[in-house]
Amino acid sequence: MTTIERNQTRHDPRQGSPSAPAIAIASVILSMALVAVGNGLMFAYIPVRLGAERFDPTWAGLIITGLSAGGLAGCILTGPLVRRVGHARAFMVLSALIVLSNAAVGAGTIPLLWIAARALYGFAICGLFIVAQSWLNDAVANAIRGRVMAVFYVSYVAGLGVGYAALAAVDIGTAQAPLIGIAFTALSILPVGLTRLAQPPPPQAASVALGLAWRISPVGVAGMLAVGGLSMAISGFAPIHATAKGYSQADVALLLSAMPVGTLILQIPLGWISDRTDRRYVLIAASALALAAGLFALGFDGGALAALVVIYIVWDGASESIYSLASAHAADRASKDDMVALSSSLLFAWSLAGFIVPGIVTGLSAFYGTQTFIYVAIVIAAAFCLFVLWRVMTTRAVPATETGNFAPMSAQAPLPVELAFAPEEQRGRTED
Image 1: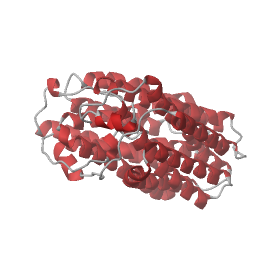
Image 2: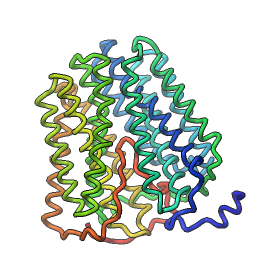
Image 3: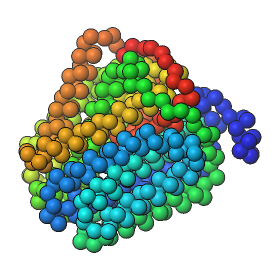
Image 4: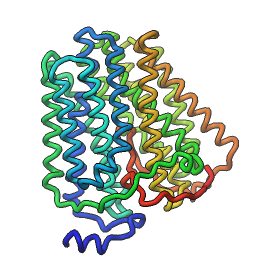
């Protein structure tokens, strides 16, 4: 079928498109999994290398803040890029930017250069997720979309885990890690470059409407703000703090590679429960679990590695679960006409918090030490837990029969946003 014929027979995007061949869909998923391996390695490598070079941990925090700023820019600028060159070329351009970022890191331990390089990476990886997920959303029918996206998220998280674990085998005194990151990113271009998966039509205008999203679901927006901060605080600053506390390169690799396990094992049972009750109850439980795990992380800070691994698995898993639960809760309350604006706004809220919180942690760490991120994460989890509890006490519950189906997701991979571009902002109103 030609591109013209395909566009002529295209279904309403809200009803889903006929599914593309599995091998074509797998090409995009494989590409992102390969990217994840390099990304995970670089996340672990940078703070360990800075620690080995005796740089102040504040530099590592500034690098995380720069990465988050780049991600926020990616949310805004990916739309115009895709409209100009299409999905496949945009994917290749953004992958090339990640290669350039890793090459800059490999040029030497130059913190200012690394801040710029990781900001470029943040822009590129956020753009890659928007491109990849919107492409998949267009390619699959509604009947299997949830399963395809679940495979997408699990593949990416698994790739991150492999990258984290690879740090133990890398000589951090050389440019070995950036070179491996470049190699995996270059490999990731091949499946997309060779794919026969048809590209969606060019998107229209971007649509971010935080006011509308808040009217639809205050808990959903608050959840994205909370998990944006939690995710960047825990995943970004855990290796910085562990390095500052004197844990070895292999210990840091083990801790980081174990953390995604929590995301994989906690989301399914929590999601299953949330499909059968008011999701807000499950959000309260998840945030309370994240709060408790944060307190344990503080109590066992600097202690036995085995205890910390278990604590961080639970801590990361509970925090990441807030992401998918809050997204599903917001979607339950949105009309079809509001879904694009809602998902784009939730992505923006997640990115905004992911930019602001690392900046706060970095600033406070200069005065109170690298363990500051634990206190900040505890405060965020407690505040969100109390907010959802207040919403439960002051608003009516939505019967379980009105909820949709939960899909496991990770805050390390921005949620699908139906292109993050809406042809026209649709306004409606439902209550949380």
